[in-house]
Length: 304
Image (cartoon, rainbow, N blue to C red; front, side, top):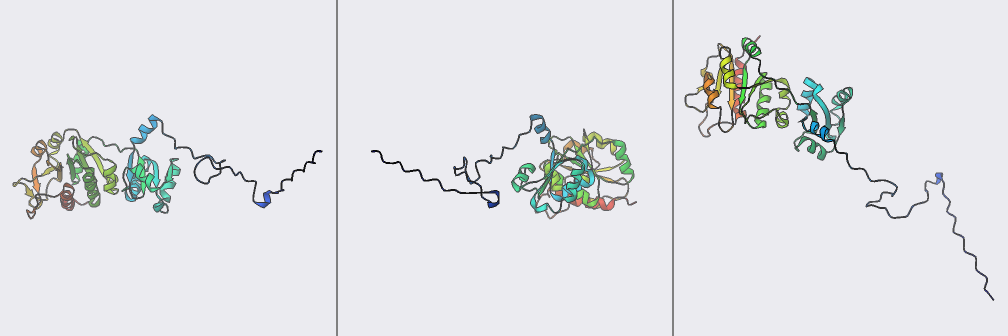
C-alpha cells in the first residue's frame, strides 16, 4: 500500500512594492569586476578622431598657462578653437568659458592627466587653449620705414634655436613695450611654438612679428632708416653706452646660442655690440643679454 505523498511546503511569500524601497534582487555575480549591477553596461571607449580631423587638431597650437591664455582671449579670441581647464582654475575661467559659448566652441573641465596630455607637458598651469596658428607675414619694408620715422626700435632673431629663449625675449619685449620682432629664415631659428607661448606668458600676443626671407639683404635695404647692431664677442665690439642715442633708431640683432650671429648678417650690420662683464664667464644666455639691450633701447626711443 502506497504511502500518501506529503504535499510540498509552499515557498514563503516575500512581498515587495515600490514603497518598500527594495525590489527583488538579481543575485547572479556581476559579469565584470567591481560591484556594478550586471544591467549596467561598461563605459564605451573614447572615440578616435577621423584622420582628417586628427590632422587638423594636431596643427592647432596648444597655449598653456592662465596669463598666456588670458592675453590670447584679450587680443585675438577668434583663434581659440577649444579650451580645457583643471579643477584648480574653474572659479577663474568663467568669462573665458562664456566667450567660448558665444562662439559655439567646446570648453571642458578635465583632470590633470588629460591636461598634461593635451598640452604636451606637465607645466600647463591648469589651462590649455587649442588655437589656430598665428600667421607670421613677411616684413613690409614700407611699414618698417614708418617705424623708424616714429623712432621705434626693432629686434631681430637670426638663428635663436631654443623656443624658450624666443619666448623669454618676447616677454621682455612686451614688458618694455617694444612691439616689432623680426625672425629670419635661418634653418636653426625657432618658430612661434607651444613652448614659446608658454614661456612668453602672454607677451607674444602684444608683438607685431614678421619674417625676413634673406636677412642680410633686408638689413641693407633698411640701413638708411635703422642703425643695425649685432651682438658679438669681438674685442672691437662697442658697449651700448658708447653709441650716441641721437639719429636713427637701433635695430638689435641676436644670433644662435652656440655660434652667434651668422657672418653674412654681421657683415651687413653697421655696428657690433657687446656687454661689459667680469670676464669670469664668456657670455650670457641670449635671452638674458637681450633683456639688458632691450631695456636700453626702450629708454632711448623717441617719446610722443
